[in-house]
Image (cartoon, rainbow, N blue to C red):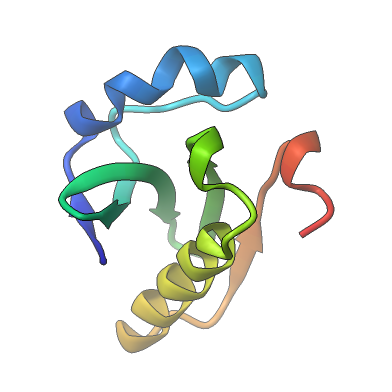
Length: 99
Protein backbone atom coordinates (compact mmCIF):
# COMPACT_ATOMS: atom_id res chain seq x y z
CA UNK A 1 0.00 0.00 0.00
CA UNK A 2 1.27 3.47 -0.88
CA UNK A 3 0.16 6.46 1.15
CA UNK A 4 1.38 9.99 1.97
CA UNK A 5 3.72 10.21 4.95
CA UNK A 6 5.08 13.13 6.97
CA UNK A 7 8.79 13.97 6.85
CA UNK A 8 9.50 12.51 10.31
CA UNK A 9 8.65 9.01 9.04
CA UNK A 10 11.60 9.25 6.61
CA UNK A 11 14.11 9.72 9.45
CA UNK A 12 14.88 5.99 9.89
CA UNK A 13 15.91 5.94 6.20
CA UNK A 14 18.31 8.92 6.34
CA UNK A 15 21.58 7.18 7.19
CA UNK A 16 21.02 4.31 4.76
CA UNK A 17 19.89 6.67 2.03
CA UNK A 18 22.85 9.04 2.44
CA UNK A 19 25.19 6.14 1.68
CA UNK A 20 23.51 5.96 -1.74
CA UNK A 21 23.41 9.71 -2.37
CA UNK A 22 19.88 10.44 -1.18
CA UNK A 23 18.96 13.60 0.66
CA UNK A 24 15.78 13.92 2.66
CA UNK A 25 14.47 17.48 2.95
CA UNK A 26 11.85 18.63 5.38
CA UNK A 27 9.96 20.69 2.80
CA UNK A 28 9.55 17.80 0.33
CA UNK A 29 6.35 15.76 -0.05
CA UNK A 30 6.74 12.06 0.73
CA UNK A 31 4.89 8.82 0.14
CA UNK A 32 5.62 5.53 1.84
CA UNK A 33 5.24 1.95 0.68
CA UNK A 34 3.91 -0.41 3.34
CA UNK A 35 3.93 -4.18 3.52
CA UNK A 36 1.90 -5.58 6.44
CA UNK A 37 1.95 -2.20 8.22
CA UNK A 38 5.77 -1.98 7.92
CA UNK A 39 7.19 1.03 6.07
CA UNK A 40 9.64 -0.52 3.60
CA UNK A 41 10.23 2.35 1.16
CA UNK A 42 10.00 6.12 0.98
CA UNK A 43 9.88 8.44 -2.01
CA UNK A 44 9.74 12.20 -2.40
CA UNK A 45 8.39 14.74 -4.84
CA UNK A 46 8.30 18.51 -5.09
CA UNK A 47 5.80 20.74 -6.86
CA UNK A 48 7.38 23.86 -8.34
CA UNK A 49 5.80 26.59 -10.46
CA UNK A 50 7.15 25.27 -13.77
CA UNK A 51 7.42 21.52 -13.10
CA UNK A 52 7.22 18.67 -10.62
CA UNK A 53 10.34 16.88 -9.47
CA UNK A 54 10.04 13.16 -8.85
CA UNK A 55 12.83 12.53 -6.36
CA UNK A 56 14.71 9.31 -5.74
CA UNK A 57 13.19 6.61 -3.59
CA UNK A 58 14.75 4.34 -1.02
CA UNK A 59 13.64 0.72 -0.71
CA UNK A 60 15.07 -1.33 2.16
CA UNK A 61 17.36 -4.10 0.94
CA UNK A 62 15.10 -7.02 1.82
CA UNK A 63 12.41 -5.71 -0.54
CA UNK A 64 14.47 -4.67 -3.56
CA UNK A 65 13.86 -6.32 -6.89
CA UNK A 66 10.11 -6.61 -6.33
CA UNK A 67 9.01 -3.62 -8.41
CA UNK A 68 8.44 -1.27 -5.45
CA UNK A 69 10.63 1.49 -6.93
CA UNK A 70 8.63 1.40 -10.18
CA UNK A 71 5.32 1.44 -8.28
CA UNK A 72 6.47 4.52 -6.34
CA UNK A 73 7.49 6.35 -9.52
CA UNK A 74 4.20 5.53 -11.27
CA UNK A 75 2.16 6.44 -8.17
CA UNK A 76 3.74 9.88 -7.85
CA UNK A 77 3.32 10.66 -11.54
CA UNK A 78 -0.35 9.57 -11.46
CA UNK A 79 -0.96 11.57 -8.28
CA UNK A 80 0.49 14.72 -9.81
CA UNK A 81 -1.30 14.23 -13.15
CA UNK A 82 -4.60 13.98 -11.22
CA UNK A 83 -3.80 17.40 -9.77
CA UNK A 84 -3.30 18.80 -13.29
CA UNK A 85 0.49 18.86 -13.49
CA UNK A 86 2.06 18.11 -16.87
CA UNK A 87 5.82 18.65 -16.59
CA UNK A 88 7.97 16.20 -14.65
CA UNK A 89 11.64 15.81 -13.93
CA UNK A 90 12.84 12.49 -12.57
CA UNK A 91 15.97 12.57 -10.41
CA UNK A 92 17.93 9.50 -9.45
CA UNK A 93 21.12 8.27 -7.85
CA UNK A 94 23.66 5.90 -9.41
CA UNK A 95 21.85 3.07 -7.68
CA UNK A 96 18.54 3.81 -9.43
CA UNK A 97 20.05 4.83 -12.77
CA UNK A 98 19.18 1.50 -14.47
CA UNK A 99 15.51 2.36 -13.97
